[in-house]
Amino acid sequence: MSVCYVHTTNIVSNLGFTTAENFKAVLEGRSGLDMHAFDFDTQPFCTSVIDETKLDEAFTAVGGEGEYTKLGKMIFLSVESVRHELETDISSPDLLWILCTTKADINALADVDTEDEVLYPLVHKIEDHFSLYHKPMIISNACISGLQGLIAAQRLISEGAYRYVIITGADLVSTFTLSGFNAFKATSNDYCRPFDQARAGINLGEAAATIVLGKEPPLRKGDKIRLTAGAICNDATHISAPSRTGEGLYNAIQQVLAATGAEQDSIDFISAHGTATIYNDEMEACAFFRAGLDNVPMHSLKSYFGHTLGAAGVLESAMAMESLLENTFIPMKWFENSGVTHHISPILYPATQQMQRCLKTSSGFGGNNAVVLFEKC
Amino acid sequence: MAQVITSYCKIKDQQVLLNGELVLAAPSGNADIHHFLRYTYEQLGCEYPRFFKMDALSKLCFCAAETMIPQSGIVNRTDAGDIALLFSNRQSSILSDKAHQETINDPWNFFPNPAVFVYTLPNIMVGEMCIRHQLTGDTTFLLSEGFDADMHHRYLDCLMQQGAAQAVISGWVEADENGYEAFLYMVEDSMVSAGLLPHTPGSLTALYHNSKILTYGNVD
Image (tube, rainbow over all chains, first blue to last red; front, side, top):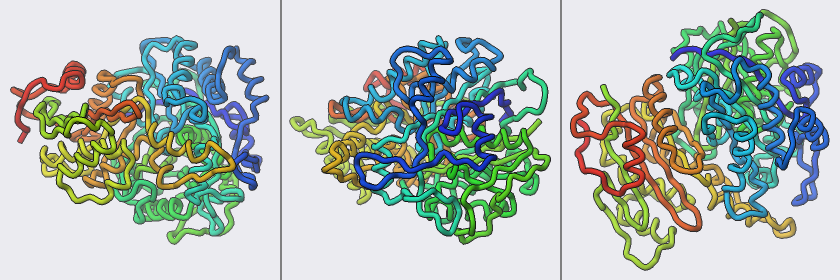
């Protein structure tokens, strides 16, 4: 497996429309989560929702026009933001666009009768606007979709299929997903608290995030990030509950460490999935412990962005890269006392130190686990 | 070593075909997907109560996998962690999506069911396959407007060339209110390629569009 390089990133969330804005907000301790009312329940839900007026302004400012859904505008804005940083034309035959989404415009299903309306019109608009040369690859593999997008891109680049791949992860907070997770009793009424004793479930969030990977390092000066290795493993135990022993996540971590030869103590931090459900966080802590990573500083960013589903892996990777480049740890907001059985090393302060590498993990329904190692170079 | 298609299964129009041979045909008359899947499950003769919890998409995939995987002997010659799964379809989990949507259309009559909601992700059918056959490798689910032989071929080749898998079980499984189809195939590296179908976009397109191309044995 050969390495590939990060060229640029973007995050569109309600904390900002660039990676830098989002990073700044998070270091200031701001969370995008807040109480929002939904018509199906008398209680508000703690969610991270993008202000449509601000989104419309930003969308128009970058030349967006025509009929786009909210998700369409978020994706447009995110792709448009990285387009200026590309070293090639976005319509080049050397370039592939990967879209990672779990439910796309699923809200449309309330009015139309077919899934065709939920995804493809949006994809066609983006394809046409940017005159993309290749048909996009669309990944819908639950909560690992985003991180899987990066791994798929690395494999395709390594095989020489493309020189550049743009990976966009995007999902909305919808009545569809919120009602489902709530029926599962997986949502918290309060701000989510990953790995904490008081954790009571997830908060949903919406975001679009984009990362551009290339075969060669970017031409710009300064520190760069490379994606050194990635792996995906399945638990094969349950469709909605994680393996109690963290088997799939442990295996994926082992594969990444073996492929790179990275020692556990050479990893500066772990950006965990950390959904703040009882079982997910317990499973992750178990897998990290088994892999000898329990002394590595770790965080989950869900307390800032909520669980952004298909966008999460891309968004959290972009934040992790910014953390590496700025040599600054992102603390895990609202963490007070560990609520998992195994020892963990949560990041509590935005301390600064020279950093070299980080591990990003995602796990999801269907038994999936994805792990990626990023290194500064 | 050459990548070859060592086995394939198709389910369509109330028929199940393995490597081009008809193995099961439901009695004509009732084309309902649920009846057909129930009938097929019974004919397959396996005891797997989990089947009855699944949505139609997962059941359809289950029936095709159950027809192809045990007979192929793949799990005897390849480590479970080295078998990747690569699947796609057009309409995601549309049947379960609509079933869930019906329970939330009216805020005054709101009754979402977690047992339905969990199937509103297309990759759950792949997760079900992992549980049934104890496969612990890489899994991928893609969406595209039609079976994209080029994309399937390119990414499957990447999985094998990059060492992410020794063998890949791949396919297109689609179910909606108008119909259903499943096309599963298996790709492995083989020392001999004579008499075996090479893994090319052309082979995949031909197998997907034609119910019978050729008959051949398994790779040993």
